[in-house]
Picture: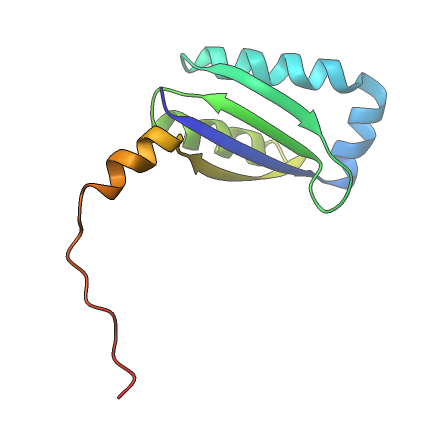
Length: 107
């Protein structure tokens, strides 16, 4: 099943809510949301710095990933970026595709 990295940054309202409900409640909420689109939460971590959350989810397809990202962002408590992840084996297979590409010339 495809894997996606969800990177979230809380709004001020979201940070206040997190302080009231705690981190475990947020992880449970994401587990439930992933299950609702036939997916699974693989990992969920809080971070210090520019980003607040890194979550890896296994989801059936990009429509499910987009639905989750839009739903979370639409709630207004966090802004979500989504990154498609590839395993080393998937990259091995990709390298065999041999796309025909000619780079732009500077002359």
